[in-house]
Each structure stands twice: as structure tokens, then as C-alpha cells.
Image (cartoon, rainbow, N blue to C red; front, side, top):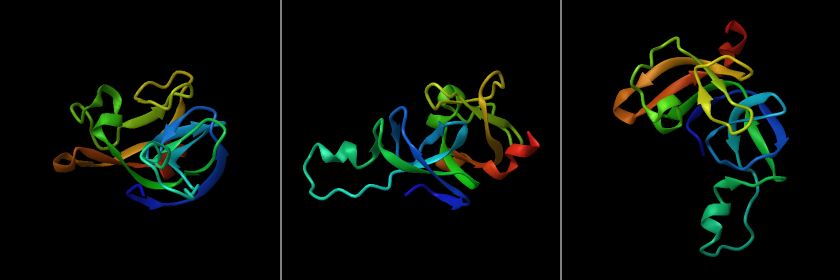
Length: 130
């Protein structure tokens, strides 16, 4: 399960594949993907399906709260240049995070940098302040 201080949850249907615990946006609702389907049997190929939400699959988007995002999922895949207060947006087409406003959806504001862990906390409750 993603490390987070959970807030509101939104039920969604995936229009593009997303990995459980990663940033996503569906129908303009941004947050962290949470796969909510249980496997009835387990085989080696299920290792992927257990962590990946496929197109057309029902899942939950954790919409509010503070969410932990790994550096690999940040623009440039690095913590370099990131600061508390940086605004993050999410690209609708592919769920990537960006610092560019454009037509992207507000994701949240970086509230803490976890250098030793290679991650940041993003406060998604602060979207309206962006």
C-alpha cells in the first residue's frame, strides 16, 4: 500500500494503465492509484497484475492528504532542484508529474523532502492554493 496520510478517495475506471501507488489522474481527478481488486489464484504472471491497474479496471484514487512520491516519479526523476513549496502538476495523457502548468491538472505542493529516502511528500490538500 502506498505510504500516505490518506484523505478522500474517488472510485474510477482506468483509461490508461497505472501502477498501484503511483500518481494518476482520471477525468480531471488527480491522486495516487490504489488497486482494489483481489486475485483469486496466484501464478508468476500475476506479479504484474497485482500491482498494475489495467485499462478498464475499477480502482481507487486517493485524492487528498499527503502522499509520498519517489524521486523516480518526479520531473527529471531526481530530487535535485526540488524545494518545499514547489507546485506539482500531472499530465493527463500519461500520469507523469511536471512543474509546468499548461493544460496539466494541479496535483499538489511539496511539503517535505526526504533526501535519505529519495522521495518527497506532496500535500494534495493544497491544490486549491495553487
